[in-house]
Length: 304
Image 1 (spheres, rainbow, N blue to C red):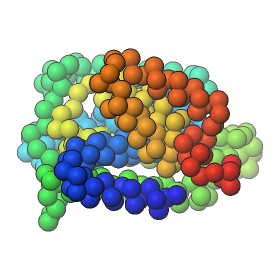
Image 2 (cartoon, helix red, strand yellow):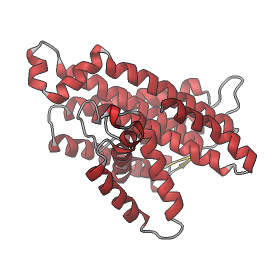
Image 3 (cartoon, rainbow, N blue to C red):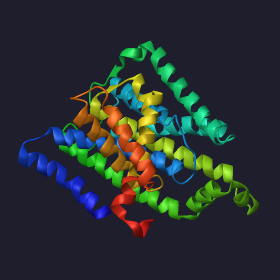
């Protein structure tokens, strides 16, 4: 299944060139970037049972950091992307250190509150566009790679997606991942075994935040624009919906969920502004009849 998914990702720019549809590459780039964010969220939701409703804050912060650097003439991807990851990781460390003192609905509400704080902070930053957002003058640059080319940029984003998937897959199967997953089942039992559960959870939270920040930087390069909307609670909700649609605890499901959500928006938004009503019906059906989401349907019963 993973090989088939990779083949589809590789085939998209080829098919776009054959049929003369460059829009397909842009649409696929958007899906890949959202897929990275959804995968990072699934890392803490699906394996750590940490349901964050403020994940868009890290996405937005990464986008703003990259956008501000690019606006000031610093365009090397070796600077903009790591800077975005570092800023998002530091924010995630602060948010996680406080949020992880709670659990359940309280954890959800605290992450939502922090997300809204980032949103209103970006609205208040008039020097960076405020509610109007910040236009990004150019994309980041890499030696010998022309990121201004839409197909090349798509390939780079896909490489980032695949790299994170491989690293995250190994991470969840490692001792670190086992502790995080065990704490999701029974935190008291893992603590009794001598594991510093809070520390493991915080590290997982920071990793997820840093990757979301990287995705935000890629989005700033892709759209050439960043705005407070990137940090809104509705954006966090969309990322969570992607995880649920794709399949909680599957990693790859984040990409499938991003593809479905983006596809529904593209297909139905032209017919009605209430296209999310259709999505809501699909989401209800997924929750009721396919609890492992699209990933579970594609993988079959052997993975149940």
